[in-house]
Length: 119
Image (tube, rainbow, N blue to C red; front, top):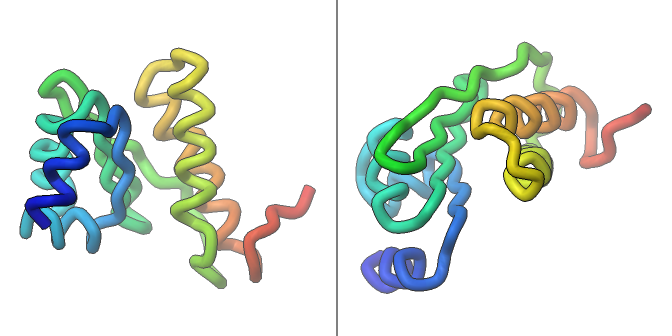
């Protein structure tokens, strides 16, 4: 745990963790874990399933609202969230937009079996 936190602080700009991973690092609920993680790197995101996500940057935490979905298979949800969030982030979009796109993709992939979102 301490080694991982040290690596995040030294080498990571953006960390994206699910609620269980964040709990393992800090022993705190998602919002509080996000606040602690953003102290170590530029941007921290903590996902908490149907509740959406918390995004922290510059001592500010915002909530990324979830998209309604009918979950069938959660495989790929974190990966799809990350791809949408990072797409926006790398294109200098506001954090709430990054979270919105990430949550949209995550909710789309849990609505199908497998990891491919149909057209």
